[in-house]
Length: 357
Image (cartoon, helix red, strand yellow):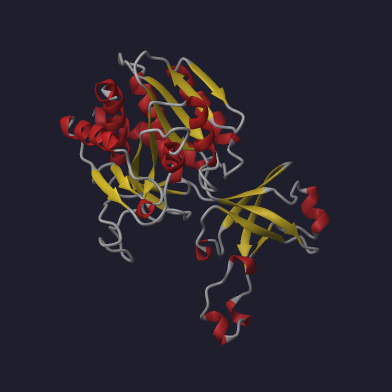
């Protein structure tokens, strides 16, 4: 019964945070929600110059930074044509075909404006054009405006941020789908970890950091780590499993529902090669606590850990991730049990950090 209640709490929190909007550089809505959630469980909460939220639980032991980025990938208005249609740029790593025909929220200065992403209808395309994927440069957003002036009256201008209009929905067998699990899953884990730690006597000094602009260059992680200078750090994020059609175990042997992923290396080592002591700490903690885990070696993307571990003289850093299908799309899928297991692992790791560092 206790496990069911925990999953229900996680599900409600995920729903709240993924239904909220906050693309890179526009994370204020997420930051406000996160501050409200963390405040009861820490000694201090502040926002730094870059916009990172830093919540501190004071202790005398080693300082541990737990970083989860608040931003989601999105779009931004590039210009408005004379007929009121919006042209846009991508903010973060979109695959163009996932954008076509999506409904979006344009975050205008007078409030949210609903729009749809359109393109030339296939009926009027030439045969060779139908065989080609539509590039985002050939798409546009229709908000129903009569012309440019009408769009501007709605509070839309060059630089207005845009996010996908998708909401959280439960699937079968403990799985859920939504936009922005990358990385609201990490944000929710951060909250649950600090909630649990507030009930325990621990030696570590813990920084729970909601970072900004991860999807466009790991920017908030770099500046927050520089200011905090933690003894050790863990990025909390999502990662790609290889358990669905279109991808093989050669691409990724990870699976949804099999527990958190401890990263050994990502981006073929160009991103993070996890510190050996951090790996030992996480693996031994998981084994001792009988928490299922997976080891990840990836050739693709990276996380905040890449920026953190190269800060100042170098910070021993690792990554703990939730395996998540269809990352960087509006229909990401994860298993709630993996979220809970990530929380379990991080709580145990922080508890015994003084034994390893």
